[in-house]
Amino acid sequence: MDKKTIIKTLEKIALYMELQGENPFKVSAFRKAAQVLELDARSLTEMDNILTLKGIGAATGAVIEDLINHGESSLLIELQNKVPSGLLPLLKLPGLGGKKIAKLYKELQIDSIESLKEACEAKKVQTLAGFAAKTEEKILLEIEALQTKPERTAVWQLEPIVEMIERKLKTITKIAKFSVAGSYRRIKEASKDIDFIIATSSPKEVRDELLNELPILKTIAAGDTKVSVTLDVENEVDVDFRLVELHQYASALNHFTGSKDHNIKMRQIAKEQGKKISEYGVELEDGNMQHFHSEEDFYAYFDLPFIPPTVREDGSEFTKLDQLPFLVELDDIKGDFHMHTTWSDGAHSIEEMVEACRQKGYSHVVITDHSDYLKVANGLSKERLLHQIEIIRSLNEKYKDIEILAGTEMDILPDGSLDFEDEVLQQLDFVIASIHSSFSQPQEKIMERLFHAIKNPNVDMIAHPTGRIIEQRNGYNPDVPTLIEWAKEYGKILELNANPYRLDLQTEYLKLAKEKGVPIAINTDAHHINQLKYMDIGVRYAQKAWLHKENVVNTWTLEKFMHYITK
DNA sequence: GCCGTTTTCGGCCCGACTGTTTTCAGTCG
Image (tube, rainbow, N blue to C red; front, top):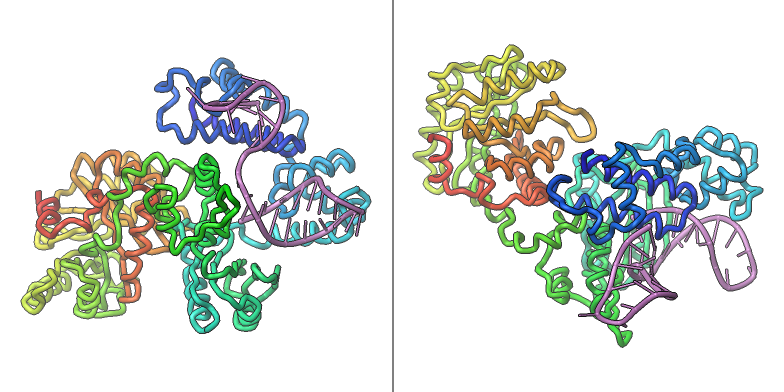
């Protein structure tokens, strides 16, 4: 029996209980027990007595013992026999929770999306107490939406929309302050919607301007404190705007940034002190409200350091507060090691890229155009690469405050061979190897290709190691834990590609790389000077994996970096 | 169902919104 199975089972039990319309506190007790196990870093064998953990009692403990002794949970089996599994998808319909679903099943024998649809169309649902015609219509609309609307939208699809909204908000003079919040602010790979907090003393006027200025497909709600709309953009996206007074801004921003678990934890902390946190401020024991100028002030009020949005997740961040000062930050970044120029498929010359990096205050950059094999990207032949190296060497004469390193993003070919010979690679300062072809090969073959690259002493880094595009393609499915082992053994760097399409390696693997002592490079893979800004999103994504400055080679001095790659 | 140095019973994070109701239950973030 493994821990994951126990956690999954407890969560499943909670779900089935919810569908039965069980007491919500009972349901959450099972969820809490699952969370306790999840947050405990130890493996099952390392825990001497799970049953004594706080949050695990007689009933949840019995489930765990059952699983360990018999490999299955009799409680879950019992629930599954009682509750049809077709009810599970009904929880995805907004407006339907456990109680209502239990009622639909009990009174109308509704046990699937299909039978719910039929019952609504036959107008049977409105005959139930607590349901009426309006609910019935809404259910039908939500069933329709479930089939057409994606559940989550990827961060790279949201980014241009967020920027568009920010441009609009800047033109509304009655807005004192605004910020994106929600999971987008926490750099989640994908989000259900976008949240904005707006400080204003004229909420009605701001609301009207929002409704007039934005490309709105549907207005979901338009009250004095909340405007909720579906935007008419390439992929439909829901956006919530919360309108608050300036003195409530920090609290509202914190509340609507979440995560839910983080907020719960904060409220428990407040409660222990007899205080009450809400989106409007902190209510003291005497009923007075405490307001804050910033989120920093808010956390300081509870004797906590500022916890960056990126790590506000499952509550485990509160056990790692001592690590916060070591987390990598944008200011620590001294260079970008993966970018393209007009020599291959980039939009700018070498000098233009270097100049843009100089503006960012970097002390060193690497130019890494594509290699010969990648014809669609105008990959460099051996001759062109040698010529480019010469040009880069001479450019260094011109720039005294930034060091330009000659590199390549070299293809690992489908047969596992490398696109340049060793004698060419030896003339470069930094060699990236990456896969851009034959994604559908079996994992064994993909690993063979990666191993071939990693054991070559001239290769310094593997770029975008999985090849994924968030919410769009899975990449070439390498065995990443093994890749991390190899990187450690051969002293290679693995990339966190900061392009929001990729964010590759992903969080769980970054954590593993850190644990194994494999250094990470955060690179923008910029094809345009506008894309150099992705360093910010990359750094914040790295924070989600709790990467420290020292884990990230971009924070190293040029000397330390050169020493590592030439050793 | 779980918890307790105010506690073994009463509360569990908090507030808003919706649709159903005539004062509130259910759902949501």
